[in-house]
Length: 397
Image (cartoon, rainbow, N blue to C red):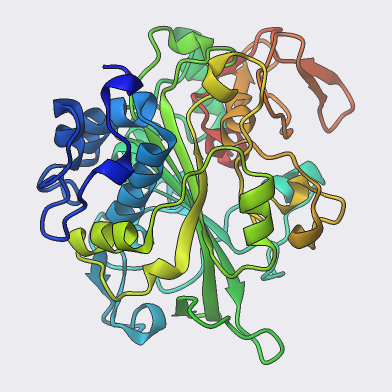
């Protein structure tokens, strides 16, 4: 089904009772937005919404971003910590396995709706690039990566959590191909202090180590596999859906969204409220967050010309210029979820991961980066794709 066969979201009726009740679009969209979309399995939702994600308009993709945000923020009880902003509830992703739960232990994760009590920060890209990992600075290290059960089970069962097992994996495989329905999230937190209070409207949580406010959430979801999964580096065919939600009053975020992000189509308050209400989240406070945009490939329309720019002003502050700490003054933002994650790869011959970098736009075999020893590594010289999964490269021990 082509995009031209669909009506724009503005021509639809987003009912708070059933999102699909008045949606005047083709059957594939009805399948995506029909009754039960907020609670169906991750695999079913991904399969049902792949057409909307990859053939829909920017407005429809923005709608899908809000639907994903609603799904991962389904609420569960928090009997010990009082919940986000003392509501007694937290989003379900706060009970998902973190990077340490996945890569730092041989114990299987206990999937139950019990949120963790303390921060489980992951190693940051910018700290890794600088050769070190901060663990104390709340403005630098408090980013948590979590994943759903589909993603967790595949990583564990495929032996992609240790360097030894990754080497063994690539003795028999040429690429990683995460299952459809895999969801990976990255949340950004900032500690609340006397001199740095939580902004009005931001959701907060009392971890064991202190009170933090929630700055935003990256969402990446596997919607379909490529016809040739070994072509991740260069194919403009979409497979993952990317969006990043940010607290709307973060300093400078309005400027970045309006001037530097390339693919966004903000929904009306009425449309947003309908999606959140349909998903059972009305009044929780999620309206204070919004997607900076969406991304499905390297370049606009897959022509290889205009890079798609998407990122978060805190989590990708290293990609902003001229001053990384002042997003409202940025004149350039070199962030691209798809391009950056596409370089996540492993070279079986030298048993090394491709060095982290921040590319935008289409890649080519000559794309290169120096590793920590100073050796220049070329993407086209023996590297095998990890299916956009930087956590494998960052966290494998």
